[in-house]
Length: 252
Image 1 (cartoon, one colour):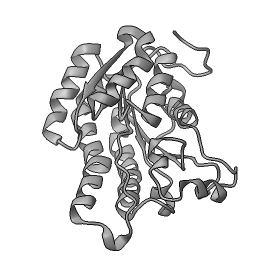
Image 2 (cartoon, rainbow, N blue to C red):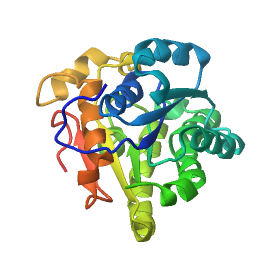
Image 3 (cartoon, rainbow, N blue to C red):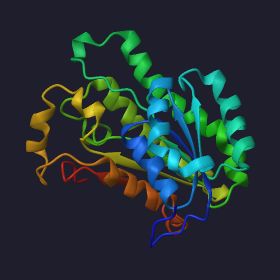
Image 4 (tube, one colour):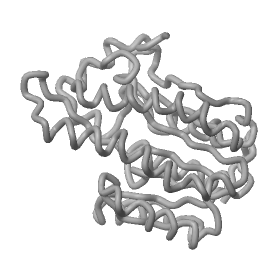
């Protein structure tokens, strides 16, 4: 099933971490709609089971892997397995993330480590393990999903979360320079507050819309649309960029 699109995607293979729900699921579905093959990585069998029901119509163009990405030693095996299944890895989307919204004085060392380990450390080492396959891929792309909190600190999210998402943006800049010689583009999409399970977990989430100039929360499909541009063949001269999808909350 391929929808009409002004962009070209050329039946490439994408990995989408956190692809079993919320923004990640919307990204996976959008990629499948334009004819890409997608490896969905989720952290729990429950979320993957739900994603299978949503994406079943795409048949063998979509496969699912369960993995705790913060367990770095597992990444090599899972990347190799995905490449063996689809024959290439052309696009990597680091969308898996852990929200933290504690007050500064209440953040424990374990809270900090858990957030940094998944949101930033796992993203880097997954890129590292994927690099040999991306270098051999067609129009290779790395797309990191950061957050408005990484741009301006955030209102409801905590400091560990903001630090991890800001670090992901800095990592994007670094890798965009270092991987350009391989013709690999590296970009970030930084969503604002999006209608999702994650935003519902924020304290006073209903008040956040009043701080957004467009007066509403975003939709997962709106984030996925920005990711699709960065994955497309037409984005070949875009690297080291941050695309803000936040309704005007941050204008930098």
